[in-house]
Length: 309
Image 1 (cartoon, rainbow, N blue to C red):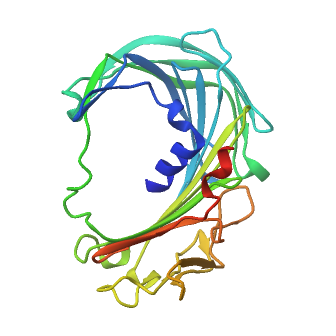
Image 2: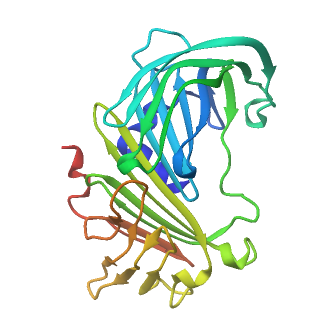
Image 3: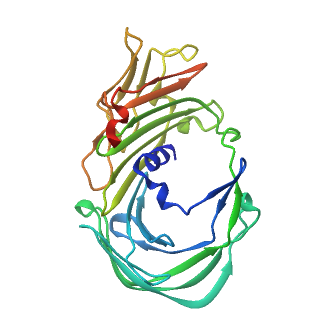
């Protein structure tokens, strides 16, 4: 998902992944490691998953329909496979892991030379308590089936996304803001025949709130028909682009070239994320880029990179 990728870079979430070193131009290295994880059913139809990695980070993810939200905090536990973490104003995840003796080898990873992960099944016991913003979902339990996945040192090849068979792109727009919160919106149009007509357009939006206590990443993603992505003249650099994504988006947005040959990104476009007020996705503070036909056009505000100063 493109929205998540840019948010991860800007918000510093690359630290959440296992450390990796470059093996060569075509491969990367993942050190040996492990992760404890389990899944729960939250209220209002949400699926909740919890994972703890070897870098002392606990991630609680909620998902339903087009929306996914991740909450990430530091693990204070000294247990190798357990956790002890507080999610400020949201809840607590504190448990120990007891294996039950069942061990299985998972399917080979094709991009990593056929290496396999190992799953150690067991039970997580303790306190798992969470309440999303405005109670959009809640869960509370003291026992849940869990597993610890472990893997050896992996040497994996990079995936070439330029040759993705039927998912070829003929137009792509993004808008990115480094304000508080970080926000990104993308719109992708796939070539005719690559997807069913009703799913040729993909819209993604994401926002990130990061502080020392907790990082929160919210993403929504939907597909739509070509009428939601209007480009007057696809054979030339566009003078106007209008976007009207379906729910959980509302409103519309317009990209327009001004007489000074700069682009404006305006409109009433908002995204609705679980538990919070709708977030507006248009303003002069967004950097924008649009690629279609034979070229691309980008507009970056003068103070865009001042957020880290």
